[in-house]
Amino acid sequence: MPNPVRPTAGLHRAVIFLGPPGAGKGTQAKLAAKEHGIPHLSTGDMLRDHVARGTALGKLAKQYMDGGNLVPDDLVLQMVEERISQADCANGFVLDGFPRTLPQAEKLDAILQRKAWGRPLVVHFAVDSAQLLRRLTGRRTCKVGGEIYNIYDSPPKVAGRCDNDGGELIQRADDREEVIAERLAVYEKQTRVLIEYYRAQGILVDVNGMAKPAEVAERVQQILASAVANPVK
Ligand code: AP5
Image 1 (tube, rainbow, N blue to C red):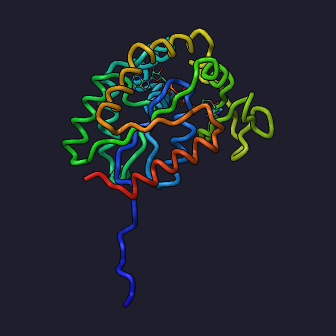
Image 2: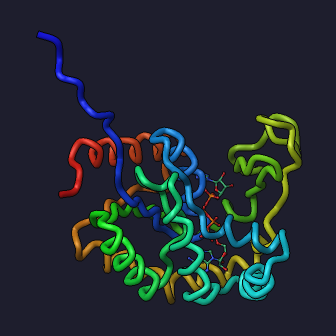
Image 3: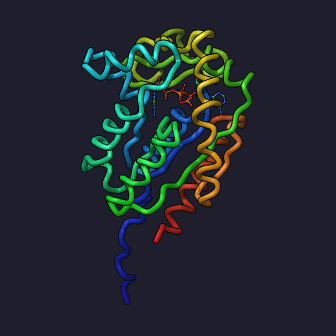
């Protein structure tokens, strides 16, 4: 007898990558999203795109971002709700840099409930602060494809140029040391609380973000594979 046709296994889950600035959320979110064929939703990237296009939201957000502060919750929430309502998010998505405050997390819960999604899966990347500083000051990003490099640990083959498309590598405006200090302080004050918020619900998995990128990716892959094998009811 032929095997029954099984539906394609999919993540069908909202996945949150949580951790301080420089923890590797973006690096890992790109890989995980590609592996599972779902969108990588970085609120930082979305806001930087608004800034670059000079939209009303971008003009408002820029003043907060340049100082290393969080953009007001209502602005970010509206942007995220619109984005996750788009058709490409129907099979799941990876949130990178959102939520970042308790009100953002609570509003996300309400949105997910309203859309009949199960509870999110939260992957928490732990990295010590000396390492965060090194990663953020050394980060360079491709202007064309968004590929992430580090001049100390994962430099491009040709200095200043992306290995994939030859695009110019740029340093983010908020990766200057004085702004990094503020971003790390803001994380401690406003975002760290989310670790306990999600841990208390039993939906947070810790990852050692100090490991090499490939090792972190393998661990993330295991976590997501387990989520596919054990879908939320
Ligand atoms: P956002 O863009 O979200 O920045 P962030 O959270 O500060 O995080 P980063 O992008 O700096 O770090 P990452 O964890 O993604 O690390 P990455 O993989 O790049 O936010 C920017 C601003 O936007 C905020 O300050 C705020 O103003 C605003 N904003 C955004 N979201 C908001 C929200 N929800 N609410 C309000 N405001 C919001 O890696 C960093 C470097 O480390 C790279 O060079 C990489 O190559 C390297 N690296 C990565 N992994 C490893 C590893 N395992 N070992 C060694 N090096 C590694």
